[in-house]
Length: 588
Image: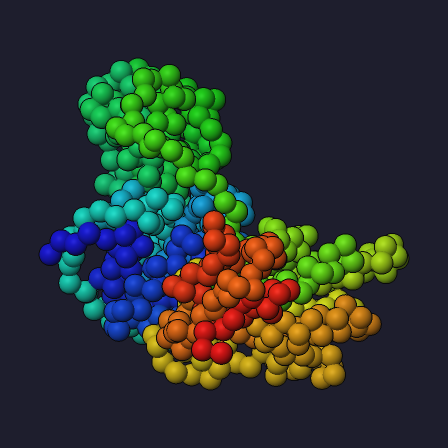
């Protein structure tokens, strides 16, 4: 049977068909849909882990136990997971072990665009790169097989256009792979220094065998057409190259990109007159080709950053472009990203913005980062997941001797707090921080598409489990009970009072801001019909409601301000802000 699938759907299908038994991940664009789709196959135990390191360790443990296992993550996640992934290469794979790492060239949903291919030689871990959805499925299956053949974890590296692109996939039946026999084997499954020293030699010897395999495997293939031009490429760049050159060039399409096929590259280069290397981000392949003493053209003319396209490649190589089939008569206006209508983050940042100039706000990764834009303009810093609490602590330490009169506020979401904020909070308690920490509990992992997390008490496979209470956890970390508050951000009066307490606090202070995301289906159903409306007789078109909330449900026209009943969920923040009482709750 054939089916159109996203690359992520196809990876999930590949894991299912390969007989994978355990899969884990932390949601992160562009990898999120892998586990979401894999969880539909009940033969595979799938979980949202609290972070990528945990996800990798779950998969490693399952592999040690003799089952095929996979952990999926975006490129930032490999940074987090690397503490576990590195030693797993020395340990090997009893059951096939695959790490999926999805890169985001162009930073479609990321703060930076590192090239995760460098992890492969850094970790001495073999790597595959699919170019379309069919290869996503096939390469995932091959990765499990090769992992067991060579007794090593494999990395499946993708990019956003492969993850989120759709193409036809041929489906096959699942192969049930029995769990291998387990027995205690400290020589294999532990990495104390005395044992790891011998393992390093094994890893290097394995790389020699893997490179020979790379030269022979059909995962790396030559397509000979016109030999005036030769192109070496991998992943999505193969699709771009075919679009640019068609049969007017020959191709060495690499699917097994570490170790690279030295002999096959030499043979291909000898068959063409001019050699191009097309790859997004770093000259990973190009540097290897040049290291073989082969002349090629790559990053000298092609950009080192952002995504490629066929048109970008044409322009870079001085080839004629393709005229657009259609041009829009007008351009859509650019607008800054803003909180959704009814977003609970709006209330807390409205009140905190009154302290701008008196505070330093260290931010974190999540929807709430949109408060950097007007009208709130609150956050000063954003580094990585969990970095708000720890960077805030460092900033506050400097404030103690700099004496600039700035109070440090740190902001972190519920999912991010579980991911990597708890250790920062413990560090703050242990080291006597005097910051005020706001944990924004919207009962979901919002920015990546409403995945459950420990606060919801529901697993990826929809099993009801224990919900972790943030207040209890905060108290367990050592924060004094008198310095912990919980507030509903829809109640601006109560929120203002708590923010004032946080600003005046002389000790570590934690505020749990609790209100579910306005876009959760359960919230939409519960608040249906609870919208606000404008009383035209009282409205003076002062636009305070618009200027201070930037709520997309509010618009202004010839007849003054109006509220879209389809967008409004009746949070009443605009009603509480209106100086003339012109906004009313429907039914009141």
